[in-house]
Image (cartoon, rainbow, N blue to C red; front, side):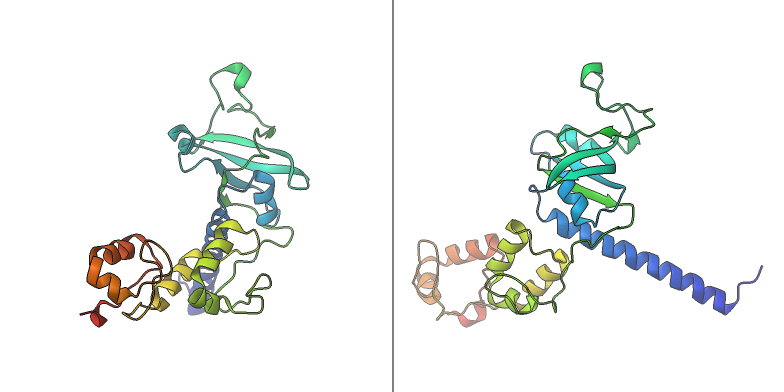
Length: 244
């Protein structure tokens, strides 16, 4: 069977749309997970625009036990009550349906359950989003780009790109500690690194044991301290070519 040029164009277009959709979903997943460990399952449900099903994992960073890394839940039904409520779904271990526990009394979901079961600890934090399988039925969170404008806080009305250049610490706070700002993490970090101003000898230290001293003074007395700071602080960059 021959495929005409128009057919090739159609299939390429469909494939591109699928890839773009996949990239956008991953951006949303990363943006939502930047709030970890503050989200519970109901909050994840709201963030993804009430899309069902979705998959999520508790303690993916192994902070409680590495045992959690091998398991996750598929959420298929939510009965919200504000930020909390009841959440129902299925249990997976190593990517496959499984009994949630070998102890009968502790097993909230069995491998062969046909109906979704109530997921324990759904209202607690430390849930991370893995994948958005369904389509949103309400407005999901907006993942802001560099040219988008902030609508809250001290930089309300400013472009995100401006704020990144002028106050990176504020952006980090808003991304990690605020439920108002969701961003394309890779994009803003790359932009910050590309546009981060380098410190010169006349600049003054604003923190640490040499606070209020010029970098030239610190360089003369303790060059290793400056190099240690640059290695351990992503916002501290020195223009070494200016120092003698």
